[in-house]
Each structure stands twice: as C-alpha cells, then as structure tokens.
Amino acid sequence: MSILDGFKDWLAKNQVPVQTRSAADAMIAHPTMQQQLAALHRSPRPWRLPSISEALGSPAILRAVTIISGTTGSLSVQGYRNGAEMPETPKLLARPDPYQTPFDFYRDSSYNMATRGECVWWIASRDSDGNASALVVVPLSELTVEQNPKNRLRPIVTWGKTESTWFSPANPAGQFVHVTYLKEPGALRGLGPLQICGAAVSVTVEANEWASNFYAGGGYPSVNMHSVAELDEDEADALVNQWMSKPSNMPKVTSGEIEIKELNGPGDGAQMLAAREYNNGDAARMFGMPGKLLEYSSPGSSLTYQNLGEVFTEFVKGSLSISYLEPMEQKLGDLLPRGQAARFNVKGFLRADIKTRFEVYQIAVAVLGQEAAAQWAMQAEGFAPGDVEFAAIPYAPPAAIPASLPETRSEDSDVRCDGMRLRQGRLVACNKLLSRSGAFVGRCERCHKEYGTAA
Image (tube, rainbow, N blue to C red; front, side, top):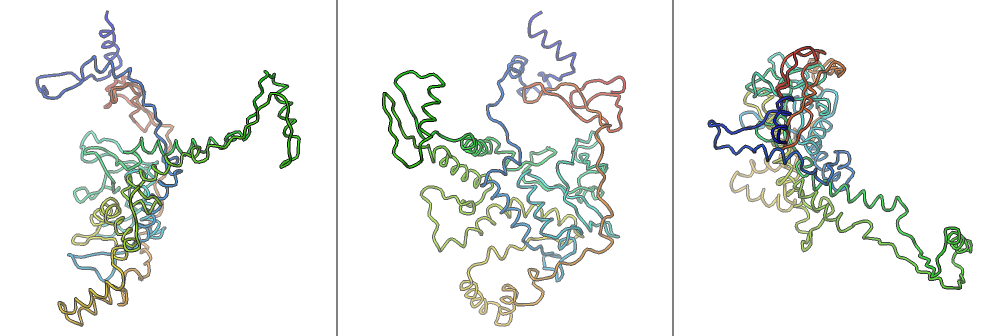
C-alpha cells in the first residue's frame, strides 16, 4: 500500500472530510490530495500571536485603546424622532445600564470593539411594549456563539445558563445585540485591529520584551579586562576582585600583559528605539488614528499651531465615527421604538474656533433672520436651556432594573468532540461542543465523527 492510500484510509477511519471534485462544483478549485498532504507538513509560522493583555502592554496600543474607549464614554447620546431632535433623551440612551453610568457602559462597549472587534449587549429587561429598557455589556470571555443547524441566520448565543439568538428587528425575541468592528460575511464573531494585524502586534510586543529582557539580565558589561596569558577561573576571579576592591574614583595600577577597555553600552540600540518608534506608527495606522495622538510623527511631516486643533476632528471623522460610533448608533436605533434614532453628540469635537463660529452666526442672520440665527447660536453654544451636554443623567425606572445577571454555567457537564478535522490544511482537534447535559449520541456536525453510545 502506498503512503497516499494509507493516508486516505486514516482519513476515512477518523471521519475527516476530504474535498474532492465533482461535476456539480467543477468550477471550484478544491485542493488535491497531494496538496492537502503537503499542507499537513507545512512548518508553523515563526512568530507568536500575543494575547490581548500582552498587546495592551505596548504604550502605543494602550494609548490608542484608551483614547477610543475614553472618548466614546465621554460623549452624550441624543435621540431623534422622524429626523427631529427629541426634547428629552430616551432613558435607554441616557442610562442603558441601571447599575452603571453611561460613561462606563459606552466606554466598555468601545473597549471591547477596539480590543476584540465586537461588543455584545444583553437585553436585561423590557417595557410593557416589548422594547428594551436596560442593557448590560457581556464579558466576551463568557460568551459562546455556535452555528444554528436549523437556521444559519440565527446563531445560538449562550452566556452562562442563558441561551438565545442575536436581536434584530426581524428577530425581536433575541436577547443579545451584536455590534462588530469588522466581520467576514457568514462569520459568527467580529474582528478587530489586534486580530487582523496579528504580525504587526507581535513585532510590537516582542520589541518591547526584548528591550526589557536585555536590561533585566544586567544589560551590558562596563569594563572588559583581557589578559594575553591564559587564566583559569580562579585567577580570573582574583584579578576581578583585586580590581574591584580598590575605592571608586581613585587611580588603579596594573602591570603585565593586561588590557583594560571601558565599554559603552548599546544605549538606544538596546532599547530598539527606532523599531519601537516605527511600531507607534503601526499602532496609529492599525486604529486609524492621527499619529499626534500617539505622540508619533512620521518623517517629513509637520504639525503647526493652525492645524493642531484639527487633530481630533481628523480622529473623529476618520476613525471613531465610522468604526465605533455608527455601528453602535444603528444597533441602538433598532432597540428604540419605530421612528426613533440615536446619535452620539460629537459637535464639540467638530466645531471650529470661537471666532470662526461667530462669523458663521453673523452670516446666518442674512439667511435665517436675526431672531432665528440668535436662537441657533444659543443652542449651538450651549447657552439655551435643555442642552444635552449639561442635562442631568436620569435614573433608570424601577421596572428596567434587572434582578440578576445570568448564572455562570459549570463546564463539568460539557461534552466536546474528540475527533480531528482539517483546518487551513492542517489536522487539528475538533473540540466542538456536543452537549451540555453530560451525554451525546449522534454525529458531530463539524468533523462528522459518529457517537453510537453516550460520549
């Protein structure tokens, strides 16, 4: 029997699906058996994908995540009905989580999106009309999402002992709201900068750890003493002790064939300053932020006093609004009654300097009239009563306060598949969750391994 035939038999015994050509999908270039066999012996990638906590150990990445999450948490949210601003912000927007401030809720949501590419809200309570009245940010480490064999459009979402589906206007019974930074069509989970740019994050982490390990081990020797005559270990130690026994900053006399050379440490090279500075630029590009906010300036660029105030405007328009605020605004709009929408108030970041603003108001007099222009100016500057930026944060109504969070589920009763499957040309453990009740009979949907008796 040839090696290829033996490999085919092994795949058949272990229920590993192998893609083959057929008349129905002749236009799809599936890998041949030889290509799959070669892929199994492919050497692993040389770099290590760091964890999120390790990535946040980089000052540039931590600064980017902090600015994104902190800025989002500091913004107020306004409600609109049929395109017009509502006189009073809906309580779901003003205080989504009854147990937290709005800053904490929106900061944690954007933090999850920046570090993990997604955030999930649990609808903790509903009002008498069935609309959400309280939301809780779900710890993503406790969440599992699995494909629904009955309906791919409604994956099964589990948090503790609570099992439901994603909420949407087409599925209002779902208890979880999924907000993503980026997502492959059909994928179950979102992707963020740290997941997509894994190699760049690895370079940043390894450069910082290399510099830290260099100095943790003592760094670089300060003096090199070289003897022409060969010395054993005891003689070398005696020479070093004799040299170090003399008082500091005093003349020292040597004789014989001994050469003493003072060494200068590598300094900037040991800290890899150039590489780490470039990594700061990588972090700025990863998160779509102006380099100035991360204390990074690309070679040849200049930042003058005139455009210093526009840095945050560039950040809001080029990164924050399109990648973080807009996805959350649309998901919040789905949770509100029909005809209502949510918008983060970013006017404070986008408005011009005070001289330019009042020149615009003066021009508006010819278009709107003096009284209308004055009213608009008072509202824009926060002089008129009822400005959302200065409004008190309302308390959540008693009916919106959830009694408790979902209980954590014990994993002792979980049954997972112990079969093997092909993933990116390599054999890996299946590990699919088969049952939560401690028994499973049937066929694994992922690797197709059969379980005739309770696993």
